[in-house]
Length: 175
Image (cartoon, rainbow, N blue to C red; front, side, top):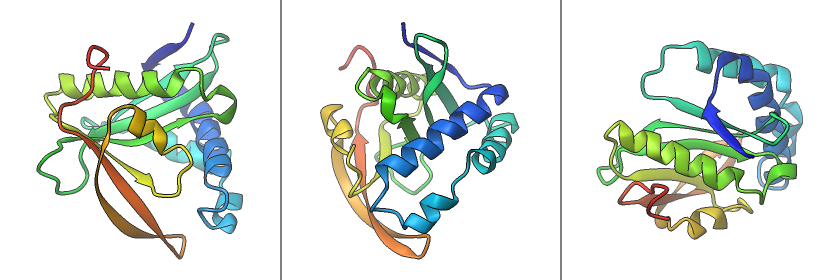
């Protein structure tokens, strides 16, 4: 049985492991390889400890566990980080380790986080996705509509991102 639950500070190493594994697998050939090679579970763990122990009213992080109780995915989100009048909520990260992809973890994380953001009265949902991300179709299947593009400098390389939006925050009952 898949379990979705709020992340705790003790989850930081497991979240960091998922973060590094998914970036190195999904973004190979997209993000500069030197940057991907420098990602370490140790460094990401320190960052996640900081995020999970700070009093962050607007940041929610959920984890997904497999049948053995191992964290195999996570999602974070909160109030939208840019001026976008149509959307108040944003999923800032959603990653599932390659070995667990296709087993419902991503969809369940997306829906659970969407529900929690809606419970905070945040209307509409937004997510930025690298244009060349091979998993971009995930957001299409969830009913996301492309809302625009930006180019950001990432590790010295300009990368195109596509914004996806849901005018009504998706919920388990709407999909």
